[in-house]
Image (tube, rainbow, N blue to C red; front, side):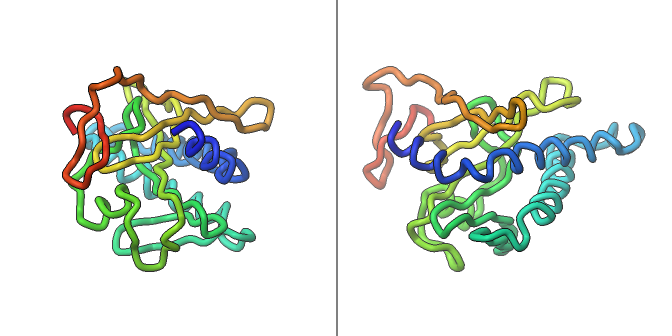
Length: 191
């Protein structure tokens, strides 16, 4: 798992600062909405607005960038880098899990299964933001590797003095508490 995380984060490293800054830009755009409108937004509406701003900012930052490709695939907005790594953008919890109704396409993405327009070897990752409890700021930016409803690993992205870095924040699992899913892979309890 550590080797996989290190390899993925090394691939993502050239993108981390722009992705981090894009999330903060998108969240800031949402905070500009008049309070009388946002007061009527539920969590899903707020997350959809922020994700929409995120995609526009990702498009501005990565369109035309060498070895990057922007893909819109039936509801999924994806950033493919070097045909080796692909980001999906979501609101996440502290462990890097996203929550929404899962379509078969979303499940296939999280399960690292082949999808049209994506190289089969490209690792599928979630780039997400975790809002604070009041929904007024971003608590942290997270990159996670989902496997079905579980997270193989998660990392917090930090930008200090213009340099992006990451810290492993994968929740600890006690040995023997994982179980095998119907495909024979280990996952956390309750998944």
